Image 1: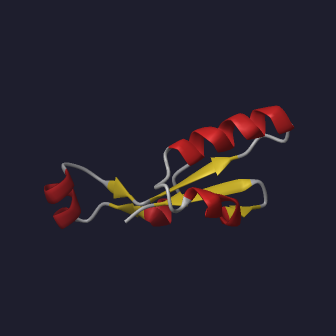
Image 2 (image 1 turned 180 degrees about the vertical axis):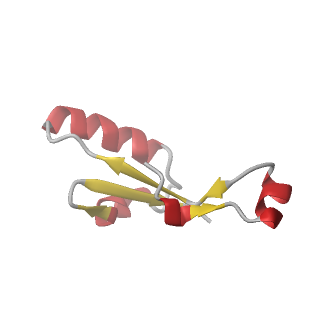
Length: 69
């Protein structure tokens, strides 16, 4: 999911990025432990190396918040 509040769609962003830009992604984690582990491994594989150990800190109510600058 991409929260509407995370979408930048002002004219400057659209001109510079070629369209709207979002800087956060919300991943709904499965309750099944095996499936959850698969999703977490995938998310960790996309993280910067120094950040992957802290990914668990970004989970709130079974939602993982992934952001970038």
